[in-house]
Image (cartoon, rainbow, N blue to C red):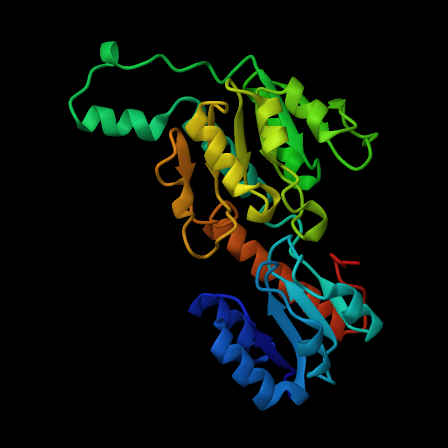
Length: 311
């Protein structure tokens, strides 16, 4: 008999068919269906597939006495009750490494679009305006790229930055000994130094509003911020105020605090580029994420360690 899997995040029909080869699947990507499935078949669920923003609560874990494995499709797992799962003997794994390149590509796309004001120039062109009536935009190259969180995604962003002749610096809880980039022991110091600040740190309570009004002020009117991490890391109200006041040069966000509702507070801000949390989404990345989940689950149910354990 196939183990019962509860899927709590959006998965395509094709990928559900892949998963169904190994599992009996219950698909509940919305809150109402989720609660109904936990109630109806929680006692038989042996594995859960979710994402970091959707998560899995301690109460839900307790409602699944047969649960053995929880997997996040992406790298994030901030809303999964990891400590509670571990205390219950439940293995937790994530999709680390499967969409790093896609996210890093998107981060650079947002940076380029913002610094060069690509959406604004597109609108101007459609309105019949020629370059001589438009303000000059700065080079992207030859500047300083600050990265908040130099994990696997942060390091891929750094590599792309080098291709644009950017000097790279970063802030982590501690310096890495495997990279040549300049380390800053505080986010404020990094923001003071950088022309661009790319947020690539995990979400969760420990990083909420880490990029504050003070940090944005330190980045300054010639500075740009890009967030491909979690919306909670960046103070939205502070960002809106800085953009409207002209104390920040621009911002590109793939994530925001109101998800999945759009960040309407930012709609009238100048030089603001928004995408709907798609940085890690491409056919290649999604395929890799599902395949890694299937391999992690195969290993777990074979009594072997998973490839990407969490906690």
